[in-house]
Image (cartoon, rainbow, N blue to C red):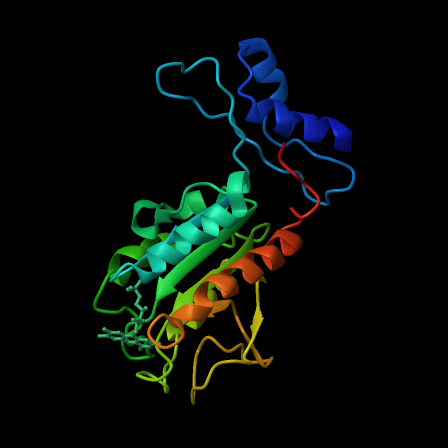
Length: 240
Ligand SMILES: Cc1cc2nc3c(=O)[nH]c(=O)nc-3n(C[C@H](O)[C@H](O)[C@H](O)COP(=O)(O)O)c2cc1C
């Protein structure tokens, strides 16, 4: 399929084509273009009340999060808005299965930090329930790009700032995932963080601090999603 045909696919899907035949033709999975290294998986979705006819494109970016006091949830929804139709609705991680993560071309995972450390890798909040989908012994994410965002508090927890990001990456790296969305340390003040990659002076993802730098959150998210669109190979596509 040519690039222009792929664009038309997006446009047609956007316009909710009312033909089952056309739907089957244009909404199959694995549509590819020569200029896109990986094929974009596009799934048809059914619309309530008219399950056979409407075709909305679903790009293969999944957004998963967990949250204690809603900061991470808000960020996840903001990230979804920035991705538009490229991403599915942000979903709680605990509702996912390990295989759900492997079904995407790319996943964006968000976690708040609640005193994660080597002695208590599972925090008091929701993490017991998210570890099963995150931890998997199989090397099943080797074709999946993973981006991580984490909420933390650099003033209150300077010795373990946003540690959850690093813990999460460790689990996903073990499953063979490719990390995208690294960000520089500039603009943050802390002593130690597992979110900093061991081999580079970079965070393993986007770190947000709504306790001390809430005014920066939106612009950080905007810039990060732009970066991710490039790194996921989506930047060249435009929806009508
Ligand atoms: C009991 C408690 C423990 C926390 N532990 C950490 C921590 O270890 N590291 C950190 O960076 N932030 C820590 N925080 C700050 C939270 O991660 C931060 O408030 C975050 O925005 C919460 O996100 P949420 O609203 O999605 O739950 C802690 C907050 C509380 C209340």
